[in-house]
Amino acid sequence: MPMFYYKFSYDEVNTQLQGSFAEKSNLNRRLDELSHENDNHGEEYRRLKEQLDRANHELMSIKQAKGDVETERNALSQKLANKYDLVECTEQLMKKSGVSEDGLGVGEGLMIVKNDRGLMEVEDMESRIDRELKSIDMGDKITALKEYIQNESRREVLARWGPGPHQIRIDLEFPEDNGLAQHLKPPPPYLTIELAPLTMMPHSTHLFLEQVSQKLWEGCSFPFKTDHVIQATTLSGDKNNPIKDNIASFENARLDKLAFQEYHHLYPHDQYTVGFSGRPGGKHFYVNMINNTLAHGPGGQNQQHAVEKEADPCFAKVVDGFRTLDIMSMRRTNGIEYEDRIIIKRTTIISAN
Image 1 (cartoon, rainbow, N blue to C red):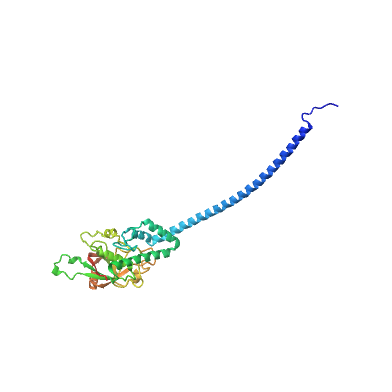
Image 2: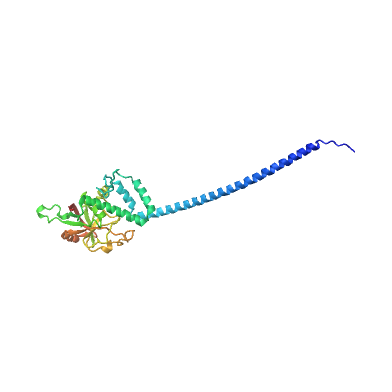
């Protein structure tokens, strides 16, 4: 029987075999550990993925909400523009400076804001308006701004001119009387108007008192007459310079317009009442020669102006000078324009109690 040569002995092979079994056992154990770790990682992965999905969902919701807010803000801005931008007018309110211990007030201009710290920055007002827009709807916001302006106007009139009634004399000059010897001149034409109560038309009353106190109407004229109104404007009464317009004086004093179309149903456009024309009103006024309640009251100007149900502010009534009105109504015109404008010589606050 041949003899074979074995490279490894039995003991050596057995030792290697045992080592292989041990290594296999270690590998199986490690495999089990890795499998368990993989399960743990998979669970963590699923948990993180769920969190990510929730975060993405919240992000989409935030983006949608932001878009809704921007849409609403744009809509509100458009509505404010249609309301003659009360915010812009409020900025003008803030830009007129003054100092007062009692906070905000109205002074030598249409509206002057006073504060212990001096003039508030326009940005502060805009920020406050932005905050308020988030908490109240558009209608409430506009109402709140109007009431604020009315309250400040009322407070300023009471402080400067008392509770009224406030009367104003408007001295006029007919062109043909200019140059006549004094003894040949007829009695000077004039109108006396009494302003509306502060409980009804405080903002319009305040504007006109400020205009008169600063003599802004002096040198202006009544250039227009129709069958239902006689209108005064900022156009000069100077026959030699008929295109001259005094509007710059009103604008420089910030007394050229109202913040909104103030109106009170208990003070309508009856015959011989006085109203502001235009949108926004403030730089032209007229005397109603007939009852114009329907034509100039709420909704009466819709064909001319975009905002529905607004009215021309009716803020005064003629209480004296009716003979002058009769003469004015009979003067010759070219269409609706007087052949010769009637000059506003002087305006005087004659009663302010």
